[in-house]
Image (cartoon, rainbow, N blue to C red; front, side, top):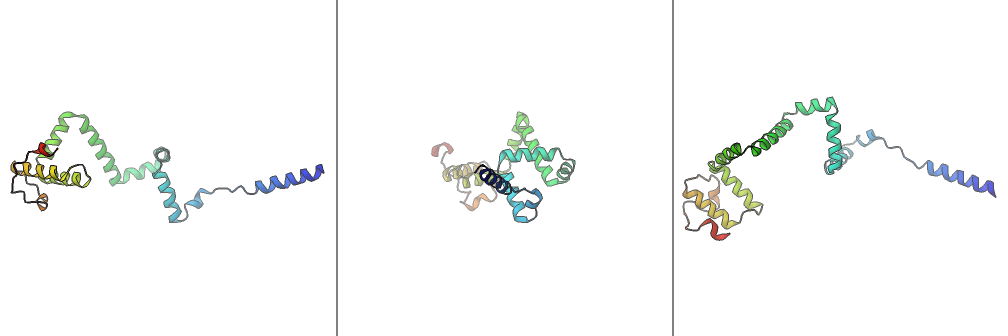
Length: 159
């Protein structure tokens, strides 16, 4: 009886051990679909992405490829420049003044804020009218209403 239990236990262990599958990472990268799944899994998980970026930074070939990618490096440098500008109050005020003097940019920003629900229709109309009264050309904004009809409405009345 003891030998039968030992034999059955040995057979059970061998059969369970044979179920272990070796994972081949290169096999995951063979098809476009599986690669996309891996990339998406990494991109959507902060800890995976952090680990992935650390690995990229430690690989000379990956660093060279990133440095040669002008679009990526431009985005990185632009982000660094914006952070530097935001830390410098003088530069920040100069940038804001430039933006405020550009009617087209202001119009685009107002439209974006309205589309995202940040700025109400009344607020946008009031701002448009006030800017029109101050002589700012709101290129592209006059499609919503005729800006040459200045209103007596004050900006704070609808807030």
